[in-house]
Length: 331
Image (cartoon, rainbow, N blue to C red; front, side, top):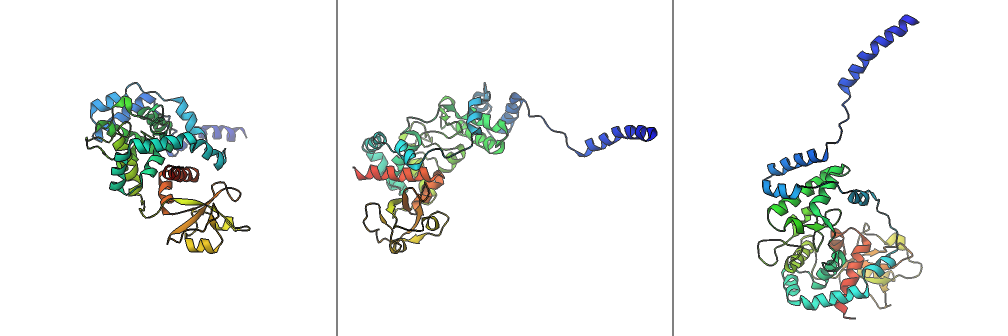
């Protein structure tokens, strides 16, 4: 027994060596400053000027508040009615109508160019940042660097960070004015850097796409986004409806269901929320119930899906439509 035990002990170092050859060692996360140095080199390889990288990346440290916000799992904690009462307030409707008057000529210009009604441009503007009054309190580069270093979604945020550096390098905004949300959404229309390069527009022709302070650029960018992802000029977003008693709301509801012509919804007994008949337009529509079978019901059209491309929340998309209706109704 003793000899067997001794032989086993002698074999252990050999076994450990073999394991070390085939099992990769766990790599420790690099020091943040080293990580920034590596990122700077990558930015330079992508054509970012050294001066831009130096100004943008100097003095950055990870922001714990951002990590705390990112770590929270999104949970629905309020009903749609509560969300609507907070987001489509009398004050916001009043502000929206005032902005429609103040920027009437500019909004008309952008609406004509991109084929998107001005009331939807203003509704999105109001929902995203309260008409530019709340763009977020974080420096975009700092926020994206924190999230890219964290590792949970490192590749995505590293790509967004490099695009943010390119925005600075092209001179669209000064580093100290590149403010946004904790997740890096920027400006009065809250575009991520990748969305900036896809959709942001130079509305006033000055060579910059300034979605932070230039209204022409903000309006053109929002309108271009909707137009690019499929906005149809011959329809609105949808309408609140009343379902017949005993309706199969669970079976009918959902954007994953095939759209049905308004004539089919009429045959099913669906009516406008005020009890009037649905329009006879040749449109496909989907039934959306943000709070489920016991909540409000809406028939929505293809443009609702376009708003959902902007923000994949039925709460948000429905509220945008309702705000746009209030802006247009004048009531």
